[in-house]
View 1 (cartoon, one colour):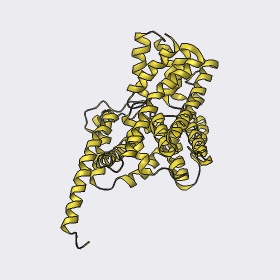
View 2 (tube, helix red, strand yellow; view 1 turned 90 degrees about the vertical axis):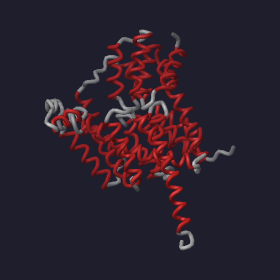
View 3 (cartoon, chains in turn cyan, blue; view 1 turned 45 degrees about the vertical axis):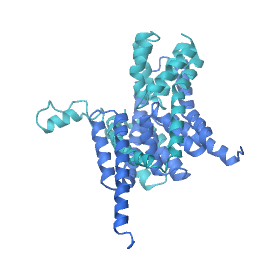
View 4 (cartoon, chains in turn cyan, yellow; view 1 turned 120 degrees about the horizontal axis):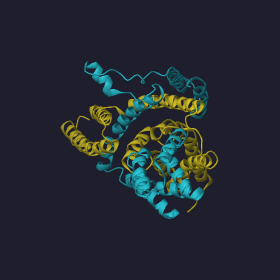
Length: 199
Length: 198
């Protein structure tokens, strides 16, 4: 398989990855590992853990890594470019469409639905992030619900409050709310604090 | 086409901000929102909070990496096609460079190094705080009227129950159109009923 086929394959992934980069994981397992044998499952596991701990969008990290394993630096670059081309085209068309018809009742209505929906998603994201920082594992809603109704097996033992995470989270909120600190500085300070107290 | 220096400055700010986001922010799509809000809405005032929420909803419904879709949306709003390319290039460059360096020089990098994991937990905790703040600020602006509250709660509940955000946002769109049509008709009735007094 040559490098342009790989890039094209990632372009196809880009067209169908609704909901962000994490959707790439099952796609890559099905297409690149099982169907084409480009890399092994253990290579891929290593890759995902690196893509998740390094900064930047997980999807682009993954594409770059797979492309690099397949055909070096140019492979990494072309796979990433392939992945984002559908975004560029579809996103540009969507914004153009919305700008052109922004005074129509259809676009206005769509936006009136989208704004509160986006807010709902944002609150969902808050709980997801809490499970990755202030708590040690994703919040086990099912177990909590079952325990409340008296039917459950209790809350899993590895679900604990991370004191370091809680402190950093609260201090960040206070600093951002009460001072004019820049988010960049705040993120760097949190990384240092995390390395010191979240081990 | 006349291109003045402020256009290039916009492209540079788009590129630089998104590169900064990609280089610093761990945790995917939603994590970029606080930095985007700080830069484009508060500092330069090129976008409103409403437009950022539109972006949040739309980037979920079109395919592709969320951070990249957001870059495309903001780039297009601020500076057209040039802005799209500048912002998208900014989003990709740091990731591609960082991953290529890791892949080329540290093929056996241990991603479970406690210092490294601690640092990333710290960043995620900070981002959690920033997202909470952003969510509360946005809630104050968006939750006006029963319809907005209903949709926000509904989408939150559906996604919590495991429904894909794509379907949740797509479902909110026709409801929004129905509400907008109903509201327009209701307003018209009110105007007609009490038209002369106003």
